[in-house]
Image 1 (cartoon, rainbow, N blue to C red):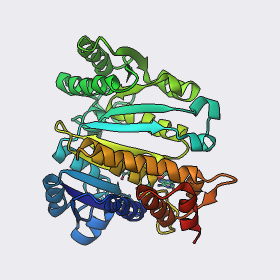
Image 2 (image 1 turned 135 degrees about the vertical axis):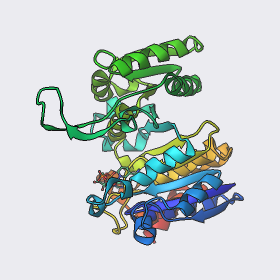
Image 3 (image 1 turned 120 degrees about the vertical axis):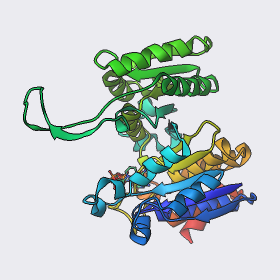
Length: 369
Ligand code: NAD
């Protein structure tokens, strides 16, 4: 097994270090190599995704990614901004399916902005199409308008588009994922207004004919945004396009208490994947040692399960995370009265101890010493 490790910027380096510590504690045989990406790569090589980093990612069985970005790069031309590294990796590795589980751990129901009874036991899987939609559609740009409400005025435009095979492959992934869970797929669209999403709805319905054991419901994106905060437990698997998925998965993140708890996986057609926390580089807290590393540690667990065929090791990590939460350990973002506030590194150490079989009582003492 060869893992490419790309920590990136901001808290990326802090949280990936903890995830690597946890992977090493499993005593698995794997090779790993680290490379710069994002702003760090731009500083060193003049590009956010240097050839050497891309080649490492291509040669690996899986990529463990931290986060990229910093506001100081906002004035750079778009192609050189740190975030372009993620888009480049998705494109060059053919990563079209983004899995974002939103699980509310019973120990964290009070950290959610919703009432505990609405989120207790929450377990949603959002599957976002990652390589199409308005984020990549051509043409796009700025020009002088020749028609519309203000002919002659400066305007900007993007193109929303989806091809049938793009919708079909993500729909298959969603139905197959639902088969292993609650057997329900909610396909989110805006078919009442957008031609692209009427097509999306038609194609998803067509693919559904092959999955009669899975229930399919269609929901407009505005209603989905509302239902996610009204009755989130009604969802099982949500499948949607790139832009709606971007927004809804962050909304779902908040249901679980903190974006610092949410892992994600982006997979190609052969289950090779890039694994990263759902959050960004959090420049506001970078370098303070207070970031929550659990989303990245849980991303490493997803990597073991989806790309490296090590389901048992993945289970060990996930149950270790439950143990540290049961021991009352919390980074600042999930802290509440009566729990113990710990640093990024302490949280990583506690997960390592739990992976090695330490009891909840021992875990608490380790971080106090
Ligand atoms: P962000 O996710 O970095 O931060 C949003 C808020 O959540 C901040 O208050 C931050 O402190 C907090 N937060 C995020 N992760 C946390 C963690 N693990 N523990 C505790 N708190 C955490 O989003 P942003 O502030 O909008 O963006 C910051 C930078 O990250 C920007 O440059 C943006 O482009 C980039 N970004 C990168 C990715 C990625 O690398 N995949 C994703 C989103 C944003």
